[in-house]
Length: 293
Image (cartoon, rainbow, N blue to C red):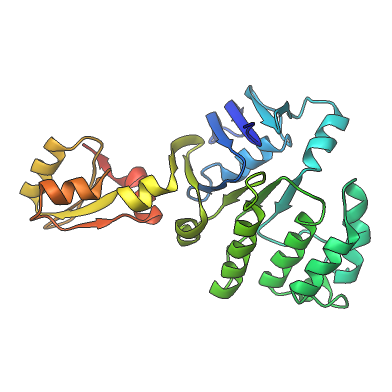
């Protein structure tokens, strides 16, 4: 089945200090793909490249199987972007507008806009049409964006740190909406987030970027179901890392934590070494800061 989004070898020099370098990733139908990395790692720049908003120095971007770069014809870009729903970390609508004024502002930009669908989401999300954008809470601002993103038959949702600053209940509601969105197996979500516990629950794949380059791209279960953190003495760590490939170590004053690719195998081979399942946050920390065997 055709990928909804593909980046192949994307490179772009942004400044003297930062560049995207050979970024390759894909979002398959029916997936929620978590996109993680530290501030300044390149997540937002990659999203801008994916939407054809910046010119590339090398590589190509395909949306729904078609090339979508900043050099593509304007009509092609508009057509492809109309099938993408975008939710940002801050509400982008004019602060003095009321919720009821957003539909006539946004709707005309999308040929597939459905007024009834939008009105249904506004009611479902508890948004007051008389409330000004500037008076919306962060969670309500996110819901307004999500209502817009879900009202034009989008096939791909792109969320750039949209859960940042939300309370646990609002994040839970958002994740429920995303899971429902991909349930038909035809639509997908690219979710950039610092809150890795959300990805532990919802993501099918996790992609990490650091300093403009992809560090890992794995099925979520390879991290949360298979990988583990072994808590070792110095001697145990040396033995474990000599026997198991693909480990990374975080050394402390009197102990060593070791990231292992399969915690069950380690528990069987080294029953004396405590080994817990890894979280995405654990995996991210070790991959970015841990020392490779």
